[in-house]
Length: 404
Image (tube, rainbow, N blue to C red; front, side):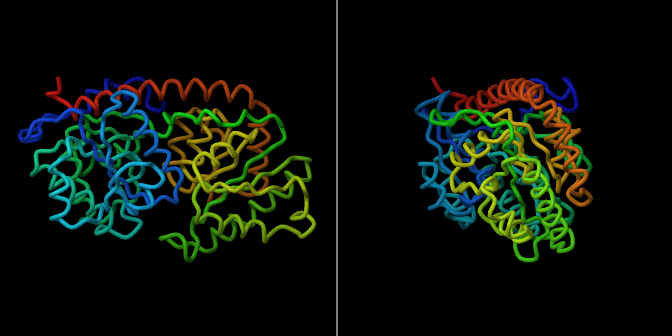
C-alpha cells in the first residue's frame, strides 16, 4: 500500500476521544448500526461497499441490525435486504431515527465531495446527520472514506465539522488525508483501503478467464454534457474516439473485446464507443456486450476477462478484488491512488492525455506479465482484507461498548 508501513497503523489510532461522544443511552445488544452513503442503487461500486459492510459486520455479529441511509431508500432496501431511510430526511425525522441507533457510519466511498450538487448537497448531509448524532450521544465513524472536490468555504466548514464529530476516522488513501490536513486535524486518522476490497465473493461466481485473449472495456461518461457535473465535451469526445480506435486494434489482433459498465449511466458512453466503430467491426462476433445490471453480473463480467481497461474507481477496485489486471484511464487522483496502492501505477494513464498508441502500449506491457500481476494483486487483496477486518472489529466495538 502506498505510504508504507507507517500509514498502516493500528486501527485504534483512528479512535478519537472526545467529551460527550459516548452513547448517552448506553448501547443495546444486538447493536443497531446505520450506514450513510449517497447511493441510489445504480452505481455497482457503491453497492459493493454496502454489501461488504453488511456481510462483514454480520459475520462478526449475526444479530446486528443494519439500517441504510441512502439516496433511494426503496431501491437500496430491495437490493440489500435491509431497512433503508432517506439520507435527506428532515431534521425531526432524522432525530427520531437516531434515537434507536448505536453507531452512525459514514460508510466508505468518495463522500467528502461537493462536485455533485455543491456544498448544500452531500457536505450538508454529513453536517446534519453528524450534528444530530452528537446531540443524541450516538458515536460517528468515518470509515475508509475518500475525498473528491471540497473547494468552497462552506463545503470545508461542513466537512470539517463532520470529521471533527467522528469518534473513529479512517481514509482510503493518503491523498485524502493530505487534502484534508489544511483545514481539519486528521493526523491520527488511519489509512484503511476501500471497503469493496473485502467484498465476499458469491459462491456461484464464475471461474477466472479461460481465454487469455478476452479484454474487458468499461467506459465512463466523464465530461459528458448531460451526465457529468463538470462538463468537458472535448475531453469526453476524444476519450470515446481513442477508446473506439483501441477496440478496433484489439479486435484486429484477434482479441475478444467485452464491453460493459459498472454504473448504469455509463451505458451512454458504451453506446458512444460503439457508434465510433465501423459497421464491419460492430458485426464482429468477437465484439461482445455484457449486461451488468447487478453486482453479481458485474463480478462475472470482470472475472471473464484476462485484462480490463477501466476508468471508474470501483471498476478498477473490483477487478483488483478478483486479481484481474487493469489498465486504468484515470479521470481523478483517486484512481491514481488506487493503482499506486495496488502496486500497479505503471499501468495507469491520464484520461485527458492518453491516445490509442499509449493505451495499446500499456496493454501490451500488462498482457506480457499478466500472470505475475495476478499474483501481486492476490497478495495486495489479502493484505487489504486483513486491514479491513480489524476495522470492522473496531466499528462493532464502538457500537457495543457496554454489551455483555
